[in-house]
Image (cartoon, rainbow, N blue to C red):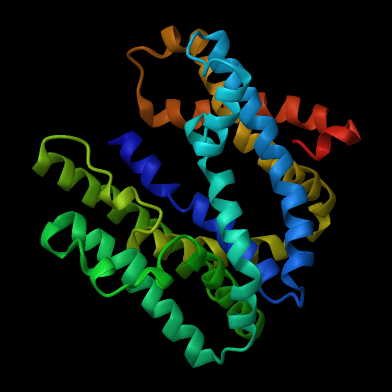
Length: 304
C-alpha cells in the first residue's frame, strides 16, 4: 500500500515536463526550421550519449546487442533502457510542436477548450474505459480519432493553464494542493481495488493519460508555478538545479541499480512507508553530484 500510494502521487511527473514545454514554447513565433534547429541540437546529443552509455553498461553485464552496427540499429528501434523512452517521445512531440503552436496562437478560448475536451475524451477517457470494457477498445480507430491522441496534448494543456494563470492567477494554493492529493489518493484506491479484483497488479490508473493523473498534473502545475513565484530570491540555485534535470533523469536508474547492491540487504524487513522517501532522497543526491560536476565542463553540457 505504501508503494502504491507513493507511486500514485508522482504519476504526474512526466505530464508536468510536457506541460512546462508547452507553456514555454507554444506562444513563440518561430518557424519550423528554426524551432527544429534549436530543439534537436539540445535533445539529440543527450539521446545518443545516454543510449550509448546504457548500451555499454548492458554489454558489461553480458546482455549487450552485439556489434556496433547492431547496437546502433537497436538504438533506432527504441530505447536501450526502459526510462529513455521519454527522449524518444519528446522528439515526436517537438516535430509537431511548431504546427501546434500555430493552432494554439490562432485559436480563441472556446476553440482551445474544445480541443482539450476532445483530447481528454480520446486520449484519456476512452483508453481508460477500454481497459475496463474491452468491447469499446476500437472506438479510436473506428472513428479515426488519432489527431487527438498522445502526450502532445499535455503541451497544449500546459500552454492553456499557463495562459489562464497569467490572466487570473494560480488560484487558491490549498485548493490546488487538495486537488492534487485527492487525485493521488483516488489513483491509489482505484489501483488497489482493480488489483484485488483481478488478482494481479493493475496499472490502468497509473497511465500518464489517466483522467486522475491529468487532474493531478493540472493542480500540481498551478501549485508549483505559484510556489516558484515566491522563490525568486533562490533563482540562481534553481537555475543550476534545473540545468541538471535531464542528466538526473537519465542517470538515476543506473545509480539506483548500483546503489541497491549495497542498500538492498539493509532494507530487508523494514517498512516501505519511510524507506521509499529516504531512498528517493538518497538516489537524488547520489545522482545530482556527478551530473553537477560533469556540467562544470562546458563541452559536456550539450550531452548531459
